[in-house]
Amino acid sequence: MSVNRRDFIKKMGVGAAGIAVGAPAMSASAKGTSTTSTSAKSYNRIIGANDRIRVSIAGLGRRLGAFIEPIAMKSANVELAYLCDVHEKQMERAMKRFSEHLNYNPKLEKDIRKVLEDKNVDVLINATPDHWHTPGSVMAMKAGKHVYVEKPCSHNMFENELLVAAAKKYNKVVQMGNQQRSSLHTIEMIKEIHNGIIGTPYKGVAFYTNTRGEVPLQKKAAVPAGLDWELFQGPAPRRDYTSETWDYNWHWYGWDYGTAEMGNNATHELDIARWALGVNFPTRIDVEAAKRHFVNDGWEMYDTMDATFHFTGDKIIKWDGKSRSGYDTYGGGRGTIIYGSEGSVFMDRNKSVLYDRVGKELKDNRSTSNEAGTALGGGGDMTTGHVINFFEAIRGKEKLTAPIDDASVSMAMVHYSNIAYRIGKGFDIDEVTGKMYDRDAMKLWSREYEAGWEPTL
Image (cartoon, rainbow, N blue to C red; front, side, top):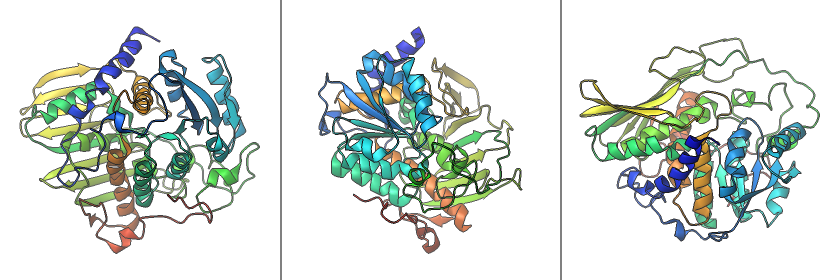
């Protein structure tokens, strides 16, 4: 670990202690719904302040590398108890990677349910595909585990509410993997925005640009050796296996497993924009989206989306998502621009740049973080700090930087966008409850589950 990375983790302990100061000034309707400013000591802890935390990881795909450092660090004081995945080769690969950093071997287990039966496990890191995020996390909380759930924390609005309710019912520490909430330069700039450095913030532009290529058409195929297709599907309705489906392309192959690019990446930037503007649920969503590239390939949903969210107080957030067009509109593959009455701010994972009202650069705050941007898998200092914050919150030493009740509001924006695309129209939203004032939209509030797999409290 380099000096800069050590400094980052050391600073995380200091920065996280003051997170409540930089948290958004929530609207009156949102007050009382977020645990962002709740003392970590209020959690019903099963971990003593100096005790080792026993961790399991479910889902050993492209995000695996993001969890090696925070688990292997001696100062984290955790033990990796299980590596769990529905594909044998994923478990074998994960064991090999962790063996380079640990002097012991975790257990390998294909079935997440067996992992959760182990009463000695304290934590589930849930890095499974999207359709498993809420069901697996709720199962874990029922079994007495705290949960770090990767984004998107839910597959639909029903699950979004269920996850928050489960965290409250079982009194568990639940953090979503929107890791920029643990970015020091972002925390500092958000605090300055809330203190008026750009006057009244009124608009956020969140964006993502990538050059994803052509994906194969789905074809019925034999289930790959070592893959438990039944377990992969889990809560989703059953269907025959198609080639290329289990390995990442499930993101684009319909709505059985994925949440499209909004759930895959917009989750992050929309969260930063909402945080900066200090807003709760939007009052309206409008969307223009379509598949614009490789129109005859296997990609089944939009690859280009413009979404507009309206909020109380004449505030607005716009999303510009280009999954397969590399035109660099804003100067970077992903980020957020916040406009205020007296200036503006550009923020991404590596920097925050402050401008006055006429566009003159006033401050450029560069980060020493090495967090990945648009590369598959990602990981880096920011994720490490985010996971360490989660561990320390379990011990009662820190406050969560992305508690699930607040993270779920940003997640709702993802679901509203996808629903608007699917029904072909925008709609109004209740800013207090998050419910949608549209019958067609409300038909997509939940989803069809495989019998016996329905997530419940």
